[in-house]
Structure formats: C-alpha cells, structure tokens
Image 1 (cartoon, rainbow, N blue to C red):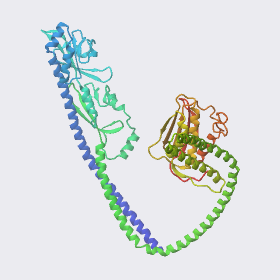
Image 2 (image 1 turned 45 degrees about the horizontal axis):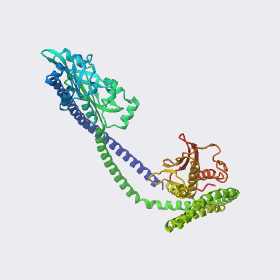
Image 3 (image 1 turned 90 degrees about the vertical axis):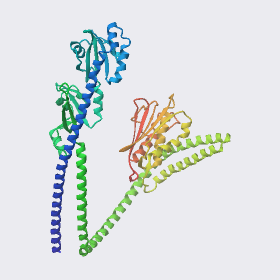
Length: 581
C-alpha cells in the first residue's frame, strides 16, 4: 500500500511539472503573438489614420477655395453695383439668395460704405452695422479678397471672405461670404476619429468636440477626465494589446496624427482609438487559446483513460469505506428519528397556540365573507333584472359568477378549519398579475354601480412569487374597496393599480380621495373612519397580517397630489416557504 501511494505521489508531481511547462509555453506563445500582431495592426491603423487626415485636409482646403471665388464674382455683379449707386436694395437680398445655393456658402451679406447691412440671405441681419468688424475693415483697406476669422456670439468661430465693391476706383460697399465650414465639421463627427483644426495661434477653431473650440490642444484634452497613473497602469495591465498611446481623449488611449493645412498656417490633428487593433489582436489570441484548450483537454482525456485502468486496485479499500459509511447512515437514521419526535412535540405545542387565537380568526373570516356576500347580492339583483327583460344568457353568466363566489367563501372557511388542525400546507408559486385580475373581477359589480376610472399597469411577463393566491386576492379586494369608499365624494374618482417587478415585487393602489387622517392607527384592529354599519375596521389589520405571513409588508402614505397610496411589497421569485405560525 505504501509503495502504491509513493507511485501516485511521484506521478502527481510529474503531471504538475508537465502542466507548469505547458502553461509557460502557452504564455510565451501568446505574448509573442500579441507583440507581433499589435505592432503590425497598429502600423496599419496609423497608415489609415494618415490617409483619412489627408482627406479631411483636402476637403477643408477645397471648401475654402470654393468660397474664396464667390466675393470676386459678386463684386462685379451689375445689379448689386447699381443698387449701391441708387440706394434701392429691394431686390438685392433676392439676388444674393439666388447665388447662395450655387456657391454652397453659409451666408451672403452686402454692406454699404458705412458698414450697414443692406442685403443679406439672412433677412434678420438687415440693418446691422459691421463697420468695426474685421471682415469689413480688411476689405475696405485692401483691393483683394480678404479672409477673416471671428468668434461667434453663440460660441465657436465664423469664417468670412470679403471684398470691396467699387466703381471707377470709388468705394461703393463690401460683399462678404461666410464659409460653410460647419458642415464639414459636422461630417467629421460621424467618423471614427476625433478631429480638430488649429489656426496659426494654436487655437482650436474647428472640432468634433464642441467644448474644445477656442482652447489650445493641451487645455482641450485637460477638459476630459485623464486617468491617474494608477488607473493608467491598471488599464495597461488589463488591455495589453496596444502600444504606448500618443494621448488620452475622454480617458481613452488614442493615436495622434498631425497634418499641415496649406492655408493661413493652419494644421489638422486627428485622434484615433485603438479599438480596431484590440479587436483584431484579441480575435487571434482567442483562436490560439482555444487551440491550446483543446490540446490540454486531449491530454487530460488520455490521462483519465489510464487512470480508469487502475480503478480495480482501489476496490478492496472501497469495501472498508462502504462498511464505515453504512455504520454512519444507521447513526444518522437514529438521530433523524429523534429529531422527528422533537418536531411532533413542537407541533403539538404550536397547535395549542393556534386554538387560542381561533376566536380572533372567526372575526376576521366574518369580515372576509361580507365581501363575496355583497357581490352575490349585486349579481342576484342584476340576474333578476335580466330575467325580467328576457335576457337569460346574460343572467346565466351572473349565476356562474355567484357560483365562483360560493367557491371562494368555501375556501375562506376552509382556511379557518385548517387553522384548527395540526400541520400546514406549503405555499405554491403564483402569478401576482392573475391575483390582481381575479380581485378586479370580484369587484366588478361595485365598479359597475359607480363611474370610477380604473388604470391598471401590469408587466407583460409573469410576476412570480410564492404564497397563497386566495389570501393575496383578499388583500387586493380590501385595498380596492377602501379606495372606492375614499373616492365616493370625488367628482372624477380615479384608482391606479401599478405592479412592478425587480428585486422585490411592489403592488401600488393609489386613489384621489381625501387621504388618510391617522397613519399611526391605520392598521390597528377595529379602527375605522366609516359610518356605523359600513365597516368594522378589520380590513387593513387583516390585510397587513396576510402580507406579513407571505413574507412581505403593507405600507400606506398620503400622496403629494392628493389621495392615499397603499403599497404591498412581496419577495420576488418562486421559492419554498413554510406556512407562518
């Protein structure tokens, strides 16, 4: 036996060493694959980012060049020159609108020699004075088309091309074209890059991030939550499929590419995420890991086959273990029998306690029987009226409902009868939605006699809990009856029933009545605000006890909008619960 144990120990050590060697090989292969593929895919991403940056720059320059030609053409327009000479600008704005669509500009404005807007594609700007603006002054002082960059009142920047309008060397006015660079900026938002354009003063004038405009690049990146050194180290430990990043945008490592724009000393900067690199590298690594897992599983299968051949050698030792196990089972059976005897004694003691409160339960059952009796009275009156009107089919439906109410009364009396017997039945899984529907069906006669707006909000999927459905229906009927009584003096009575499911189940019954006067005494037995003969004050006390036995709780409060709100909170999910004592 000792020799066999020595053989098993040495074999186990040999297997452990082989497993460690296999694990080290796997780690080495994965690390090498990650390093090579990361460098390769990162270079591909960098090249593609440079190509996209070149396209962004080309579209920007193309738009600027297209808008720079428009002032030169409009400065020679005979109708605009004639309007500046005669002072009649009634058709000038329409003339500018005809050019707007063809030019693709954001807006066109015509100024007189004093800087006043006399014509514009945006008629709200008519009459404005721009004599101190950069685009007006630069055009007046030069004989060529001038570009100006100005900060907008609403944030961001506006881009103008302006040129003086003259005749015979005399200044008549200025024509200004606002370049539609905002459209290009918006087109960049849908790409996979964050793009910014900086002017010669290193100020961001175009950006896919609106809050970056007007800042320099460092200040713009600082507006985002850049991770601390510890967070950065943890991120690099978790995601080791990227090279050291160029910058961080929104806390994420990015690749930075810079391109010089051949205009006014501008430059374009793009930030590209490493998400594509991570996905591609992780995909290859996942395939490698899967292959190693299959190889390892094959090795374990071969090892298990060898172990199966040695099972026969352990059978003799197993016989002794079986004999010991049988001895333990006999001792456990004797202990279990003693525990059962103790449980019988405890049940006998509990039965005495049940009989002591049987009188109190009789009052509760009497209160609960009043509800179906009232409903039966209403159905019988309706059936009598239907029979008098020769409508026996509808009267038969009322008799069916009366039969259901009789079954319900029998179930209520059976609860009292079972309370006097030893033992208890286990709760069963149930759908709370079905209990709500059954309670509404039982209250249908009372609801038909009054004009009450009932709003029912139930989930589309089953809301399961474990308990006694009949007793839960009693609680819901009590709450609905109280809501009807509370709204009887309202002009537009309304009752809302809301069932929500999450970690717990919450059933809310809300009315627009007069509210609750005394919340502290609300659930005490025989407390009522109704007139004598309308109630004995046991409904809420019984309901609170039923909900407690179901493992939940019943609460009440006054709504800020008026009325009372009752909430039944129950544990969610089907489970096994012993009946509460």
